[in-house]
Amino acid sequence: RYEEAIAAYQWSIDLAPTFLWPHIYLVDAYVAAGRMNDAQAKAQEVVAMQPDFSTEEFFKLFVWYEDRSFLEEYAANLRAAGLT
Image (cartoon, rainbow, N blue to C red):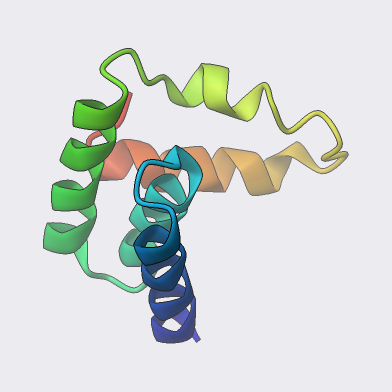
């Protein structure tokens, strides 16, 4: 169902192109779908939008997650695409 998620994130970006979060989610979805070239290209867009982007700082916002293993996998996907 990754392609459905990708389409939804792309739609979100179309609606609010300067809102960073759907771009980040799209990086993760691309990695999960095995679309590394797309993930890396989108990761570069994320850095262009927010040059000081940090996965560590981003995931500090997810304080409500009790199971941090999900976030570790998510962060690994973002790092695989080139985000730090």
